[in-house]
Structures are given as structure tokens and as C-alpha cells.
Length: 316
Image (cartoon, rainbow, N blue to C red; front, side, top):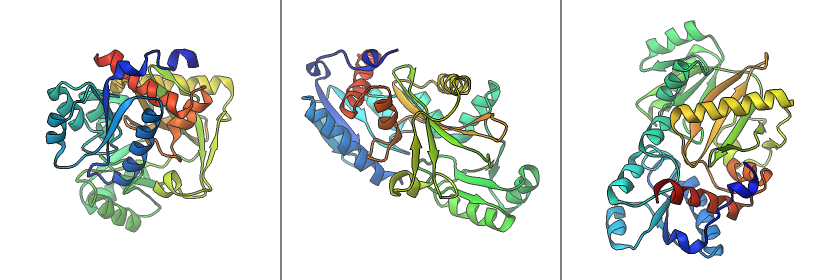
């Protein structure tokens, strides 16, 4: 699919009045505010009849009182990316951007996403679920060090930590438990990291990430100026094709629709390992989907309109 095929082919009047949903109450609220405002400004500058809603306790009242023809979801994390908002909008009869209820809920759950991938023979790092110090000890014996600890239902690397011994593992599990009742620990994959966006059924050019941090954490994603992004990603043609195919299969397995972004590691033997897939990726000035779209020939406004156009095709 070419860049021209990715672009919206609809006049802006076809979208009607668009509510951009952002903010919310999740741990990713600040990122969502930045993403949402960027999306809203892009829609307004394109001539779309759009307005913003900082999602709070009055959301139901706003949905009932405002004239809304469709919703552009830019809510990161729980309450917006986990199927809850999608379900609410389905009940309200309001078409929306991105994946549906099931895919959103599944992708937000890192454990069950991994289980789906494993069932299909897609490579994802070995892992364990942590609920006690004894679980930490068992995981250390089974998986070895280093390891990475992550809340199962958070994004933006919130609550994540790389650990190299049992004491650090227990401390990281306790910290992650403050964000989520379910905590995962995974084998550490040493090697380059890639992030791959998908848009309207097409896998966009992969991006290779580099950071002086121990991993691509919250600061590296949104604040640091020393994070490195490479497009082209540096893989040879065969390995890049393999990465693109793996990403397509991983997103299809979850049921991704519209747009998303997958994170993948490559080990020293050249093997790729799926980490997770995000159904409402960031849209800030540090975000990766706009970067990948630009490499595919779409500017930010064209990207936003393409995401919105997919909602028209998918949900009327």
C-alpha cells in the first residue's frame, strides 16, 4: 500500500463533529494530554469540526449533551486503551478510532497477549507472574538474570525496572505492585530494540531505538534529548522483511484495527522477540508513530486524518 492509499480519501465534512478524547485518570494522563492536544490541533487545522474532551466524571453527560458524530480516542492506558472506553462508545452508538473492545482489552493485558502469541508460535520472552517474594525467588532460578519487571496493565514503561539480583527483583516487584495488581517479569533480551507502527493494514517503516538509559524507559520516551531513532532501521532487506511479517502476524493475532505500534527486541543471534503492542500509541513531539508515518510519506495532519478515516470505513 502506497502513501497515497494510506491518506484519507474523504472530504473533512464526511467526519461530522469529532470529539477528541484525551486526559483521563490513568498513570499516562500527562502524555495523553499532550497527544490529544496535538491531534485536536491537527484536525482543526485541516478544517474538521473537532473539539476536545478531557475525560472525567462528567463524560457520560458530555456524550449525551454534545452532538458527536465520531470519537478520536487518544486516551493512553487504563480507561481508554483497555476496551472500557470502546465499550462505552459502542453502547452510545458513537463510532471511534482504533481497535475494538476485545483487541483493546487483550493488548492492554501483557500476560494474555504473550499467551496468545505463544499459542501461535510467535517468539516472546520467557516470563513469570509475580505475587510474592517466593515468586521472585522462583523466577530468578528459572529465568536467570538480568530480568525486566513490568506491571501487566500499564504503558509508557511506567513501573518498569531492569534488575540484576534477587534483592533488586523483590524491590522492583513491590514498586510495580503499586501500579498494578498483576506484575510480570521477563527474560532480558540483550540487543537492539525496534518499534513498528501499523496503519490501516500496512506496516510502516521500522524504527531502531537507541538510548544511554538501561532500557527505553519513560524518560527516554518523552523527556530525554539523547534518545536515538534510526529510519532506515539498519537491518538488511531480509531481516527487515522478517520483522515486518512478524509484526503483521502479531497484530493480526490480537485483532488490531486502524492503527497501533508494536515493540520488538532482537537478540545476539538475530532472532526477534515480541514485547507488546499498543493500541493507542503516543502522538507527542517525541512519539514514534508520527515518525514512522513521516518516513512512509505522511505528515502529522495526514496521519491523523488517516486514523480518523479508518473509523469511518470500519464503523460507518
